[in-house]
Length: 130
Image 1 (cartoon, rainbow, N blue to C red):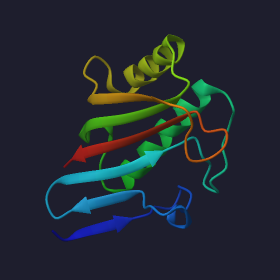
Image 2 (cartoon, helix red, strand yellow; image 1 turned 180 degrees about the vertical axis):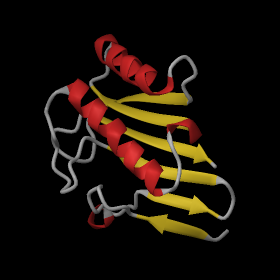
Image 3 (cartoon, rainbow, N blue to C red; image 1 turned 90 degrees about the vertical axis):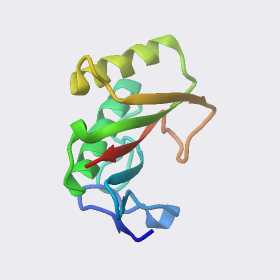
Image 4 (spheres, one colour; image 1 turned 180 degrees about the horizontal axis):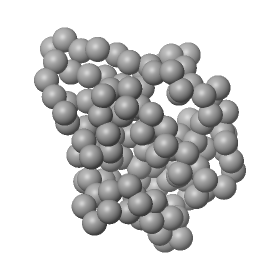
């Protein structure tokens, strides 16, 4: 199946870490790699969990727009949380509700011991449909 790889301006270049941000298939399905709380240079914007969730979702929005889509096109989220607990779940739920309201996409949350880079507390990937 032919596909297109996209690494948009506004997100840190991920190639040196061995991945790309977006894969567009020849059909209508778009895969967006895990987005974390990075500025365009790849540096964490904050050690605060809520700030990391907010920036990760903002970066997801950048990736979606680069693929010509919006949050309304997302059908599945994968979320990864370091040292998951109910307080963190509440933060995620609040920020997801700000974007998707009463009809969020499907989501699987995994509690993990650590993520790719030191200081990362949250990461989110997505599948979207045109």
